[in-house]
Every structure is written in structure tokens, then in C-alpha cells.
Image: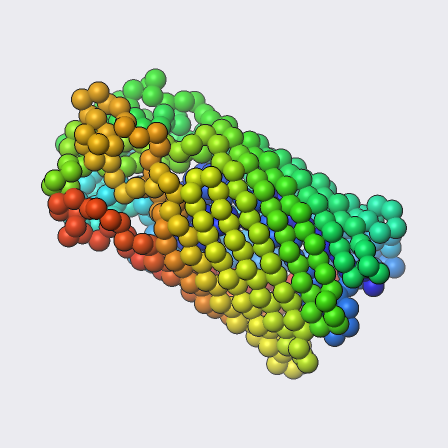
Length: 472
């Protein structure tokens, strides 16, 4: 029986983004924000004896499929995500894996502008339509549509008597975002296979090609033709000058993950990972803007709307600690993750799962997740005319600024449960239902009319997932 630490390639959510609901934004913006340190390595579920990765003499495919539906409240983003993966381990303990993910997203997404006591009109990113936000409401772009296709492949094999090599590749394509990542990991067993050390390195290349071009950071948007707002798109009357857009933008990401998995005793497995990552290139969300307001009245003035800007590099550090405890029948899974980056974000995440065995192969797994993060140094709800922005010279008095709620301070809770039941031929059917609530921290120093408006609405979301697994 061999203990195996399994690591994965980049793609998990960072501490700066709490679940899918933290963004409520397009996939290209999600991709720019959800690039992360390597996913925390997870070990096999505790058995009454030792934790083991079983090697069988006859090769067999294990096929896992699932459909996830995510819905934010208030008519905001909805995601439908079918996933299918297959793994095959031969008699020499070599494992090949493939995974296909499809995403379809629709709904309304915050554009970053601050609410106003009067209606605001914006041009859609495609430039072929406009939308109006009612007075007192946070502006949401209702025209959000995106599709994503991602394909991942993995290869794991023994390398010597006490080592295991893993290789992975992932390609992802969206309407306005392309990504390619490669990773390699090595795990080595010690202490009669009760201790496993692992090291994983990964590289990722991203290409952003936003509708209408990638805007230059902290540049004004022209006012809409009706005088009520600003926009971004293909129409000359509603867009910025062509020289204020780039045809596309790139970003590179490098990650390293060092992990140790330790069998404490027959019923307790502990794992600790330390991850470090650095990304360079364009990190702006091409669909996010900021309002320019008067410092006394809080009303739109001057250039009215400005594109956001983020630093062109980001360094991230995370520490992940997981414990799996096997009780008489049930299993407790408790983990904690600390995250920090050089943008000023600090995040703490506590995750608790309890697998309750109901008999006859049935189980119920309640889940509680608590998340808290501080805001990025350049996170702000608006730009004040004459302080953060000067409309007469169309220049910013700050190096970076963003009103993206994913970079703001907030707390979040996820509460739900997963139910599983065995089927014939060794298959399993699972169903998961979770409720998510994100509470942003109130923005300080709101001027004039903004003090009377709801600037940081609570986000609520529901996730439903159905899964089916079977040996093939």
C-alpha cells in the first residue's frame, strides 16, 4: 500500500477570489483574477487502515462526470458547467488522465461604476447595444455572454523505487481569452511510506483579446450619445480613440508548490503545502471602469468614466494545511488556507466537511466554508475629480485603481451538503447543494449623494451539482 500525494496544475481560485461568486464578472476577468498558486494538493480519503493509492493488475478506466449550475441572485451571472474526466491505471502503476470542461455563462455583471441618484446609460462591450441602470442601483451589464472549452491531460508514473513523477498540460479557450499551462511534479516517499514530499512547478501563458480591444489603463471613456453615460464598444461615438486600445494583451504565470503529506496514525492524515507564484503582463479587467465624481456632491463630473488599471506584475504566497480524520465510520476533513500578495490582499479560508456514513453505501457530507479578505492597495469605489483624476488633463493622480469587488474587502460563507449513493457496476451518483453569501465591507469616505446609496450590496448565490462516477 503506497501513500501518494497528488498535485494539480494552476487554475484553483486564489485567496483574492472567493469562489465563483466573488467576481460576478466575465470569464476573461475571472481568468485574470483566478490565476493562482498551484491548487492545494489533496490526499486519498482515509480508510480504516492506511491511506493508499491502489495498484491493480488489470488496467481500468475510472470515469467521472458532473454538471454544475451556479446562479447569483438578482438576475446576475449564471453558469452551467458540464465536466467529464477519465483516469486509467495499468499494472505498472502508470496513470493517464483526461478532463474536458465546458462553461456557458450568461446574466448581468457589475461594470465597476458607482451608483448615482439618477439613471446611467452605458454602451455594451460589443458596441452594438446600450443598457440603462436605474437610479440608485449598482450598474450591471446585462449583455454578458461567454463560452469556454478547456482540455487537460495528466500522466503519473513511478520514477525509481520511492518516487513518483507527474506531468500535466491544460489548454483553455474562451471568446476573448486563451490560456496554455504546463506543469511537472515529483513526489518522494520516506519513513516507510508514511511521509511524502512533493514539488510541483508550473508555467502558464495567457492571451487576452477583449471585445473592442484591450483598453489602456486609466484612460477616459467618451460620454454616451444620449448624455446619460459612457461606454466601450465598436461605435466611434461611444468609444475611446483607437490609439487608446491595444489589439490584445499577454500575461505569463509561474508557480511552485512544495508539499508534505504525513500519516500521523491509522486514523489521521495531515498535509501541508506552501505555494509561491508570480505573474507578469496585463492584469487589467478590460470590462471594468471607475466613476469620476465630485468630491462634495458625489455626482458624475468631467470625464465621468475611466478604465481601471492594475499593476503589471503580481506575487502570491499561500500556505495550506489539511487534516483528514477517520472516525469509527465517518470522516472529518478540516483545512485552513492563508493567502497574501504584493497587491495588499490578505485572505483566510477555513473549510470543514463531515462525511456521515448512512449505511448501504449511502453518505451525507455537510460542508461549511468561511472566507475573509482585505482589499488590494489600489481598490477604491470611484475617483474624485481633482484628487484621483484630473479631467482637464485627462490624467490620473494615482498609479493604479480598480472598483472590482473581487479586490475589495469582504467576508463570505458557504453552507451546503453533498449526498452520495452507490449504483450498479461500482458506480456512484452524487448531488450537491450549496448556498453562498458575500458581504462586502462598507466603503469609507463616500461624498455627497453617494452616502445615501447602497454602494456595496450583498451577493447571494446558489450552486447545484449532479455527478456520476463509474469504472469502465
